[in-house]
Length: 481
Image (cartoon, one colour):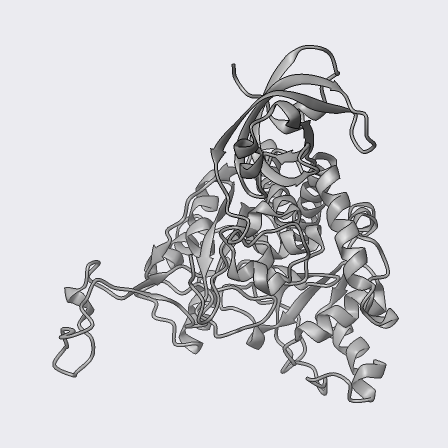
C-alpha cells in the first residue's frame, strides 16, 4: 500500500477507508497521540495509537525525531485543530531517534543554536516553513520569466572576468600550494594552471548574460554567485543565488517597470501558495517582536507588509533628490547616522537606504541616476549632466528591513564611451574583447538587473538574518556541512 502525504491526508474527507502515512514524530503524548510530519506541510497529522494493544517495546521507540510508518483509518478528529486523524492499526519504526541525543527536541531553540545544527534545523516548524517558501519563490521566478518569453541561460560559475570590478573573488586553481610554478618575475605562472590563465568563482553572470540578450532578446540567469568579502553581517553571504535578467532594447524606465512587476508577481504567487507557512512565520515574528522596544517593532505584520508591496507603486526618486532628503534629515543633522551625508557623490549605506524606505517614503523606493564614480564601468553614462556631476543610468530598489534588494542599469551601448570608461579604470580591453564585440557588432540599447535571491526570501519570510534563509550558509570562517 502506497503512503499518502500528510498535506493530502489533511485535505481529505474522513471515512472508513484505510490510509498509510510515513514521516517523523514531532511529539508523542500520553503513550497515545503522535504528531506526525513528513515535510509536505507545516501542519502535523494526529495519529492515535491503541497503546493497550501495542507492544511496550514499540511504544518506547516512538520518540521525537523517529521515522515511522503508520497504517489505519482516516476518521473525523475528536480534538480541535484539525478535521481528520488516523486511528492507527499498525505502526512500524523505520528509524530510531535517541531522545537523549537528538538536538531538535520540542522546545524553543535560539537561531544561533539552530545554525550550528543546520543539517537538522529543517526538522523544525520554522525552517520547514522557510524552505518551503524559498522553494515556491524559486519556482515563481522561473514561471514569471517563462510566461514573459524569456530564455533561461546558464552562465559560467568559473570565469576569468570580474563583472563588478571589486576584486573580492574566490580564486580557482589546480596548482599545488607547495612548489607553485613561478614566472621569471616571481609571479604565479597561471599558464601552467588547469585553464592556462587566472580564474575565479563568478560574482555575476551579467556580462555573459548580455551577450545572449543581444541575440535572444530577453534572457535571465538564476544561479550561485560568490563574493570573498569579509562581511560578517546579517545581510551578507559568501555564496548566494542571483537572478539576473537582461533585455535588448529596454531602457532604464523599462528596466524599472520589469523589476517592479517581477517582484510583485513572485511575492503574490508565494502568498497564494504558502498561506499556512506565512501565517506561521507571521506569528513567529509577532512573538519575537514582543521583546523589542516599541520603536523597533515593525509597523506592519508580515502578510500586511507583503500586501503593501504588492498593492502599491514603488516610489521612484533620483539619487540627487535622495541626497537632499538625507542631508536635511533629523538623523543626519543630529549626527545619528554612522556615515554622515555631507555632499553629493556619497555612496549610500544600508542605514540611509532604510531611512528613505522606512521613515521618509514608507514604501519601496527605486533610486536612479547615481554618480558615475560609485557605479560599475558598464553602466550607461547620462548625456546631460552638470560639470563634476556625471551620472549613470543605474537603479537600486530599496525594501523595508532589507535596504538594497535589486541593483541594475541601462548598459553602456556605445563602443567608444565604454572603451574610454574601461581605460580610465585600467580594465584590460584584451581580457574583455568579447564584451566589447557586442558593442562593435549590432549594438543596441539594453538593460538588466540583479536580485539577490536570499534577500528576497529574507523579506518574504520576515527573517532578519540571511544565514537563516539558505540551507547551508557560507560566511567568513564558516563552511560547515
